[in-house]
Image (cartoon, rainbow, N blue to C red; front, side, top):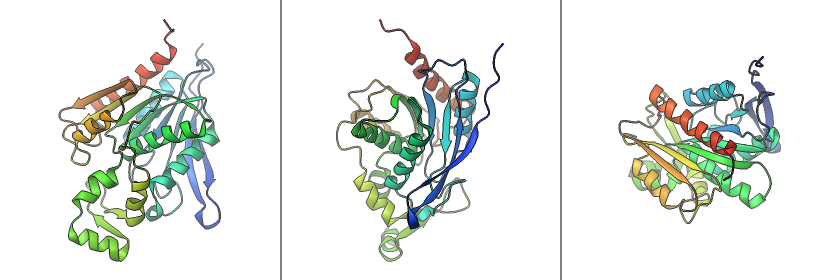
Length: 275
């Protein structure tokens, strides 16, 4: 008799101290009792201003439920159900929260699914785990419209004089969002911190297979950015899937199917016997 899938549990952890403390909301699903002990957990890393209740995050969790895998979703500070001010957010800050969530849940290994900015944080996470020498083993990465170094490569070169003046005078600028009635806010702190977290500067060694899914009709992260990322991953087993009519979200049923297939391929590779 097959055991029913376990319901995910909602948790909150506090990251930082004193005035820097913020509560981070986590939804973690335990692996089924019948799942192989070495099976990786699935970790969702969302994009800028996205949260763990988005379509792709929920579909990743549904896949975990169907296959008996553990899964981890959480919201960065200033996003979704987590505390903290969005305007204080930086790549370093959100990476710190990612590490704290992983340390709290403590999975033995991970397949990281990173969307847009989450792809940047996934790559920085790989570097940090290698530097620390402790923590879960990376079994694979699925990067959806990844946006590493987007502040330097995609925002700064395209700033208008008005936006540059706003950054200098107010510390931020706003732009209309296609995905929300609220404008996107980009702060000087985010842009300056982005320079400190650049990954497209030399060989990136994730130590695991990487599958990149990229829409060629993406107005936010041009598909050439994914091609550029490929140049910095020569040491890894990397697959790039270009979706000719795909947008930035890649949330259509056919896109979700591609995401799930990429995740399952990495899980299957984990269980394949060594030849």
